[in-house]
Length: 142
Image (cartoon, rainbow, N blue to C red; front, side, top):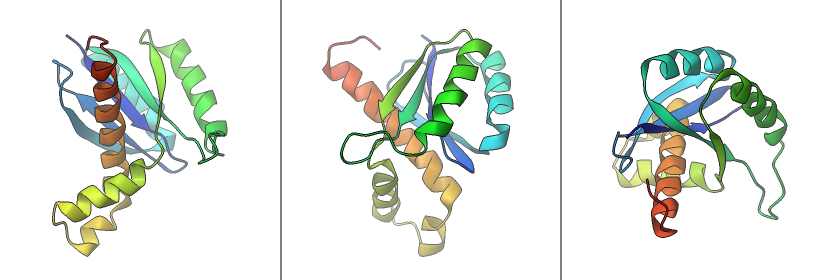
């Protein structure tokens, strides 16, 4: 099987996560400056077998797209032209909150929890793990 790559797209930084080849466990890959993201992804995709890219879909509590969607859509449209890998959106609400809770529960110190790059990467892991779990619950094969 091939990996699934998840993207928590941000204005300045973007968190990335990737599944294992069996698509069971999500792990942090990197946090990349958003201006370097396309280059990083093209390089990564040239080396690794990725069958799907999952992009966090930023929604507000009222289910409307957040302002970050205006940056994400052009990025996704460019990537769809550059790579031959399907790209899906997945609801990312609460991932930053969950990332902070995960860091707290893991016993990380206060300074580590302030590391925004780590929060972005953990958010991408949460997006990917949630996506894979929802596919399994729906009976979709992974």
